[in-house]
Image (tube, rainbow, N blue to C red; front, side):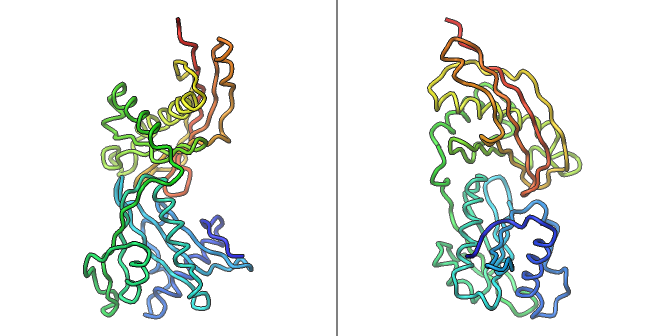
Length: 298
């Protein structure tokens, strides 16, 4: 059975890039290594493995700005073509794009692939460029809606709370791109939050992490129809690597501990959680926070 996921080990990444080179570069006598660029570490990668763990299809998603992205380097091995693997890669990348808040995807399709992308909902915009002086490419794009399980109403309400009560969140343009009850993903304006090194400002990383943790607690209170004033009691953050491109934060239920039911007994609650900040699919910062939920005063 074929499995679609991101590469996880150095060996898998080597196989991933090898297939990309064999299909997209080797036939035109391009050097090994020409299949990679400077955006690999800040991009989203997907591959399909066959029953022998051989990489047989690949594709990449990169963010162009806070709300748009580009799919590139789509390739399917010669022996696996015609099995719908290209469509599976596109669907996996589109789903991730939705969770990251992208509302539009653009790609440059080779002339013989235009029909394939049109069947998947992409619109032809016109000629793009000529690769290796012979391969015509055409610009195509597609509008994306939110992921089907995204709880948009409560997420929008939380964004409004942030923007009305915390001016910095509005200036940073912090948005909730995905919340399904268990996982919360947030992002902000990449250009505004850059430092002199052209990576995400440490203060912006901390702010995004803090509000993501606060937001997760807020949304859980809404789901459980509980009331309480949320206060950050203790926090720590570790910066592992610079965040290039458009960073995002994620809080998952698995990283949370605490008892909300204390509020039903008139007692304050303490919720501990971890938020991870990402550059591409790599964790660039780890935030641990302890939030006190105070019983409202009568």
